[in-house]
Length: 130
Image (tube, rainbow, N blue to C red; front, side):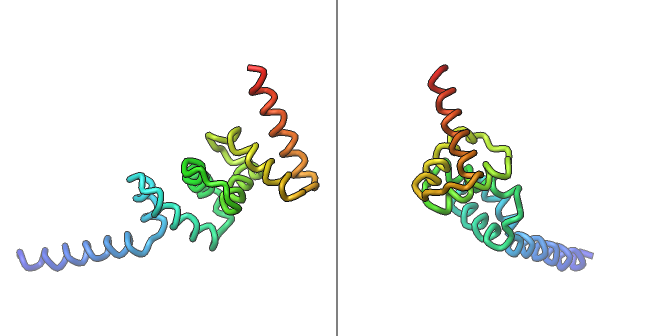
């Protein structure tokens, strides 16, 4: 009877290990839970490169970029998506001026850029009033 359980336990172990190794979503959850932002960032970037419509991933990557003080094009695009898609994000008022500044530097004059720049100015004026 003892010999019966060992193969079953080994098979279960290899199945679970395989799911963890080959499932990016599970690895992502583990890295986020453990606070391993570097590995979580890599997984999030790959997932969003393949499936940019996965809205639920943007706040996680946005948080990582925000805390890493990233202001490069990739970070700004994530922040922009969060703002334009109205995705709940704790630091919305902090990323708004970053995206607005990027739009100004790029010379964007489309209606969405103007609306966002106006919103950033309005938010900053409200902040100064206290």
